[in-house]
Length: 371
Picture 1 (cartoon, rainbow, N blue to C red):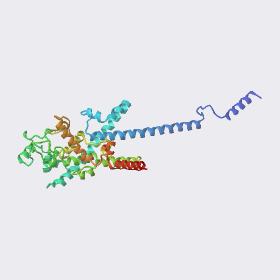
Picture 2 (picture 1 turned 90 degrees about the horizontal axis):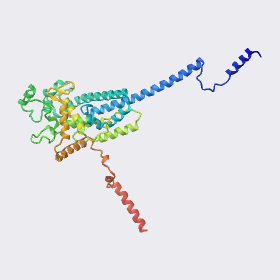
Picture 3 (picture 1 turned 30 degrees about the horizontal axis):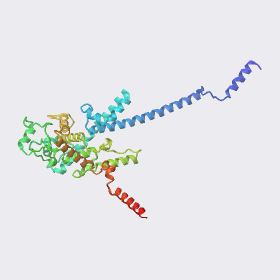
Picture 4 (picture 1 turned 120 degrees about the horizontal axis):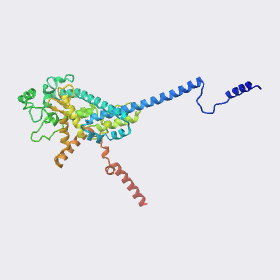
């Protein structure tokens, strides 16, 4: 056999052998198939990464909405922010600089969006509540903020500092003309904070932070607008939270609208959350169309601090007891119907179901002993 024939025979034979080396195929068709497979894997990875990023974005935005509801400014109130959102420190430790900045952007986005939502919602609701409860001669229109504030008879009464009598024409003129004797600032408690919108000048603490409009606004922000219809009775916020939880369990693949109290796991009313609602109601009653920290002589940040001081900087245990009773009153108004957390084993052991079980056991033992 000649040399060329032998070489041809060897090449033909080699083509029939299976490729067991694991090397990448070298033919054009094989390389194309291999490249397609690699691109499909990359596309699948990118889809998974995108879904993961979308889930993170949704989570961060929702937490940002919760931050805004709690009324905590990241810088001005960083101590309380760090104490409430402990997950943030842990998450930041796990992320690089770019991911951390992206997360903070999403938190800010959610906070700003929810602040706008609350402002818009309460603008409509507060107008409806005033028209319903006070029947003013000129109805308050939610789409005309310039007709709110001290221009409107009822809004003016509710915003009037509690130390002045809105029924006095001299007081009204002084406020309207912004004279030095009638400066409306954060250093006064507005009348809308008081129960039945009445104040006792010799006992300014009596009825403070117990007004109907505050209860309505708190429920609208943290539980649901529909729950505001029962502001005069104990609240059903606990039931709303439980219904939210069950809905998420049953429809874990379906988007379920969740109330804010459920997002931040709120079970009790706090001074922080109450201060946020007070500032929102004050803005809704005013004739200012866009949010500003300082409105004329009124500083909302200083007002916030005054509210927090009322609850946290108390002169002694007697005052602290009154503050605790006030917060318990608020919790009952918003979350009263569910006391599952108070059903400790010791409490349950004294209830009739447990007592009956013990009685039946005792009767069974007595019958056995008698035999």
